[in-house]
Length: 214
Image 1 (tube, rainbow, N blue to C red):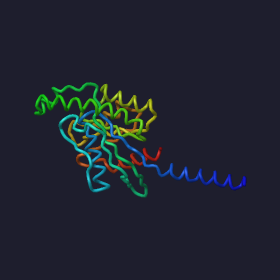
Image 2 (image 1 turned 135 degrees about the vertical axis):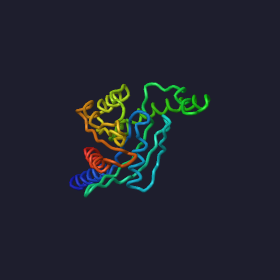
Image 3 (image 1 turned 90 degrees about the vertical axis):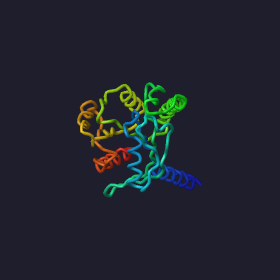
């Protein structure tokens, strides 16, 4: 009777570990508006599933709600991981409807867009509770030492969420992944162009490493 009970405990423990090991990892894409989060998420989806799943645009806060692409298998050499891609709204400390007027939106539409974008930022922060790893996307052609970037990094560190920094847009002349590394020397920084695909092979290696840590 005791032996049978021990056997059942071992069996349950094995099943529990098996399911835990097979848990899909949720990878969130975080960063300021127009850093290229959605472009990168789509690039990954296209590379491994032949289809995109989220919208990218030059208009800020085009992504105003969390969008998920489930069960994407990332392969590089003899390694592979299965993840859910979680594209999040751009994080901003201030959202002004007048910013949308500059892109041709009418006043009423701009105000509605700003309201949706504000809610999207709140939802993105809340979603960190469900995220296993993060790809923080920064614009390598812009000054990375901003309040938004520092705030995101602070949140990730305080929550103990593993992450890498994708220094995006290295296809631009004024872009510099080296500058991002100088500003954030204690973090893993990978230079990429989500638009052209430059640097993506190395990025996938680092993404698999990141996910495997969990």
